[in-house]
Amino acid sequence: MKFGVTANPQIPSAREAAKRIVGLLDRKHEVLIETDLAQSLGASGIALADMRPDVLLAVGGDGTILRALQLSDAIVFGINSGSLGFLAEAYADEVGVYLERIAEGDYRVEERLRLKVTVDGRRSYDCANEAVVHTAHVAKIRHFEIRVDGTVAQRVRADGIVIATPTGSTSYSMSAGGPIVDPRVDAIMVTAIAPFKPAMRAYVFPATSEVSVRLVKPRECLLVLDGQHEFVLKGAEDVVLTGSERRARFVRFRDDFYRRIEEKLSRQ
Image (cartoon, rainbow, N blue to C red; front, side, top):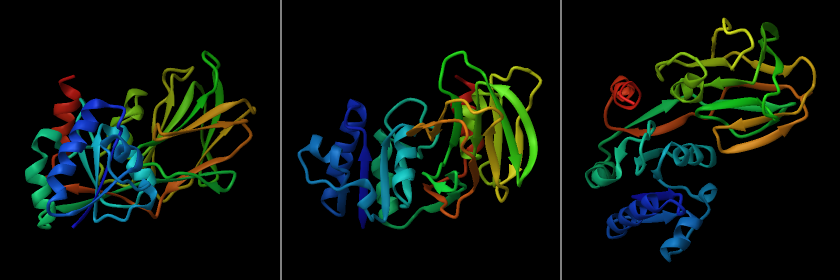
């Protein structure tokens, strides 16, 4: 079997976990290691976007998993070497038995919604968690207009707008007051960040809708995609989001979304 391995080599726990995993796999399988990680391990590497593995092992936290999903269409097995790790399927110290099951084909693939993001008609990175349009300056509120399939759904003065998938509903969107949505539901959540009117509520739209975020008056803003990529907007752009044809694919061994909520969120 062909495995890909990615981790942030600047994080000691992730690097050491990845090193152990490569050691476990090297004896039986073909292993492709992302370039920066490979250099830190003294091995040959390949760019993540150029990998074509059967399964991609993302070792670290949720940020590493989200980056893997942005740069690769491979099936991702998230391995938690950090703390929260909401998207991960296994902890680094228990990964051996799961790697054997993957090699034997004893797993299922869970597909989840990603967002297709375009700015003035130009496609950007797809998002597994969320896209955020945020004021570029501290304490500078912006006036946003949200359109759904061409119809104005909401005008709100706020620090920013979070447009999230169900996967991202337990991340920034939740922190901003958005709902938790079962990942089996294909939907887009739109939540204002620190709205001027506290009574403003989040919206949930079908994933087939086109959700447009515009500023009523052009002002500089930032567009942040999955916390991985940041773009400066002049404020006159039309940011449009809809369900992507590219699904996020995860290795899964169990159905435990609600257990994860209890474990990761309720007891924090």
